[in-house]
Length: 104
Image: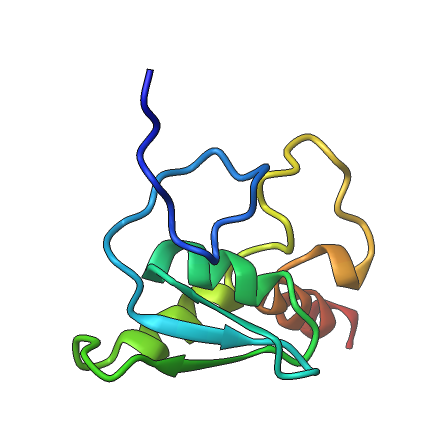
């Protein structure tokens, strides 16, 4: 049984497949990074504090901004299903903005 290789940005516990070749690099606050497909790069970026995303030289136009926008709506560590997401650090940035609007 052979497995399809996944991009370096795919977390070992994330069961989802890549949506294409690596097109961006995701960097954390210490500048450690991983190249990834748009799907896994967005999931990784959503799981980092102070992460950044940059297009690779041969990336399609808009790849980094698509990853950035997708990450905004993804909860950190989305492969951890069933866990309560009650703290701001456990929710997506978009959900936290929505909830802050309700609290005012």
